[in-house]
Image (tube, rainbow, N blue to C red; front, top):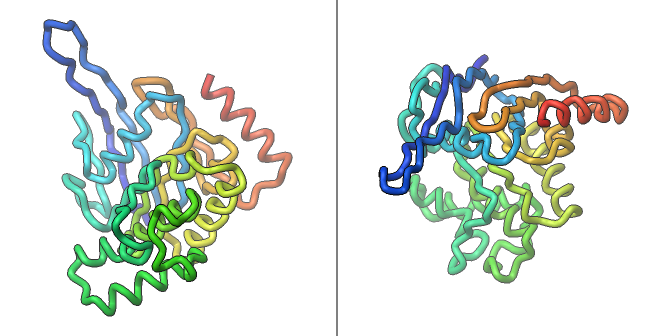
Length: 247
């Protein structure tokens, strides 16, 4: 079943005043894409090709210039809690503990205190953070902070998880652990995930399908379904093919 539909999606940012002569910037051009329920889709492309803009439009934080996004047949016009966006920056509230940060979205949903506490602790447990529930962000490593950010997103039970290079700021070992954790949770809960990444290897390790955008304006230039897990020789061949498409 189709979960998300991107229909002839385009985005142009207007230029500034005529005094400095800046012209409009077309970020995305005529994107057609279907995402299935429970699919893990990775989005690759050169810097500035509109990947983040695409996620923000799907999240309802940006409006397209042309075309539309549909979530289960309904047109997306604004943010909805069924679509949660995780940014590269951790964006944790420094005055709240890990549990307090995870409870934040649940409080906005109007859940009673005991239910918030129970759901927050359960989500932190999934991510191996039981011992750090009452720690503040400054007491946590970068990887732990990113796990708290992921826990906060998962706690509100989104149907679609939108991730904008969520592991780019952590070290290689932590990144590998977070990748494994994300894939485990996604498979266990069958969540739909759209992941923007600059890492071809990360996309190959995690995704059920990869789409590649061209340089700005971003157009869909390559679409690859991936059997998981990938054999090493298959991964090498696909990696070379994707790198060639990015040139």
